[in-house]
Image 1 (cartoon, rainbow, N blue to C red):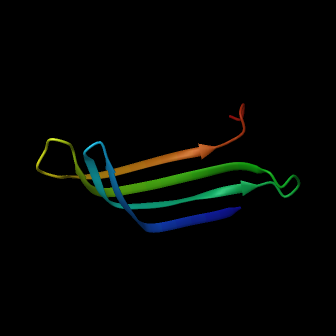
Image 2: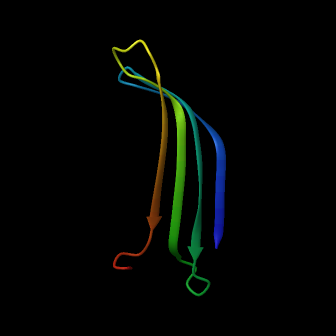
Length: 77
């Protein structure tokens, strides 16, 4: 089992007139088979907090997004 985490990663994004300034925090686990040395399962959790400005708008809005994901072999239930 490999645990990972990384916090306070800066985000400074500008695409098509939209801007986002904030930070990303993420963490999770990676399960590796001792027999085959292959990744068997993984998790990812991420929180993003920032100030978003959309094209054509003078004000910014605060965003707080959380997402999660898993990595597993196809067919595993």
